[in-house]
Length: 556
Image (cartoon, rainbow, N blue to C red; front, side):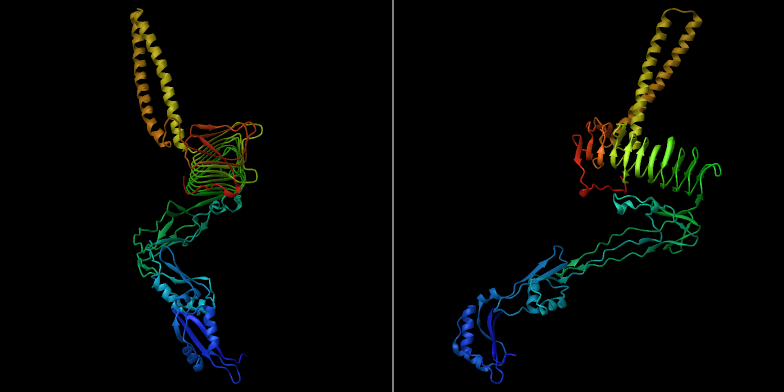
């Protein structure tokens, strides 16, 4: 332990301060020359030796203001205050003081905060902790505002999974696990299905500058909607099942639909047509029909059968339709593979391994993301985007993909155009027949023959009038269809949001169509390619696995 006397000479708030401490017993005292020498080293202004001697002789350990020292500010801590742009947070950074300056105090930090306009939400404990631990040059939150509590409408809390069967929302384009895609969630009569959390009232906040931060007060009415086999409690805050079955959320309405579960669909069951959901544990035999207003879930294979669902279709194996198999659904289709089948989905189409020799039409996206992910010798019409690893085959089997145009509108447009062409062709034939009748009448035939010719002539004229009316009606439909097909000008314009993503190869022989623009891969094929419709044509880019394109599955 040092027994000698000591002194502190330091800058603080514009002044040089001196505190002298006496020695212990036979220790060496502080001499005024010691203080004067230190003052010279630090560049402190001149002070009379007598004043210094008086403070040294007093040696009471109390700080004494010697002289004003403006230049000493360079030794003091710098206190930096930063405000977040929204005024809800203020941070402080205190630099380490140089030798000859006093350690900063809490009052110094508070003064700096007040100088920056910070008056609300100051965290004194954090400031004191920073200074006590001498955590210099560390940025801390010194003040936090009170965030506003925005008004919130009542909230529906579901006691079932309303998004089951949709792992792709979190999996992106990793492999889909068909074993986990159970669309059916059975509940029992009396189960609580959903509750209504009360709304939250608005409360204004306050920034660190003391300003009021207004809260949003607009809300919308939210209520529980009871569907079939459900019942609202009297106060409207809870929804209860009134029957056993599969619970689903359909356009904001909770419903419980009965579920039919069979081992197989064959001659032991016959065709199945049901208002709820259907679960087939094994197979659907060739030639049979399964129709459901809800979901259809099949555990094994499907052959030359017909499936129609008002919801989703899940094939845990796949389908080999033999050229006659057909699947239609209003929701999404999941399958391991699709072969020799016709598929019409108003949602998305997800296949793990392959689509082969099939016709697939989807109103949203088509995604293949298994190990193979191949599309071979098929026709695909996709309103959204298409993602696969290989498109076409090395044998150059014809594969045609149409992307970015609404399938329903496209079909209506093509049908109307064919109708116009057919009417025009028939009109031409009628005109020729009418001309022949006219010549026959002027040739001078018997009276009976002449009457027959005139009757035939009138029939042809009536038919021509009907065809002319049909042709006029079809031509009137065309402008509206053109307008709805993404701003039709001379060609059909595909959506700018649609993409074709091929992780591996587009083989020669494949044709990709964006609206009316066509892309033909080179003879050696195209590798790792992303195609999209641009203003001047189809744009081709390289596929980068580190920056995968992202699709929105919530609508297109």
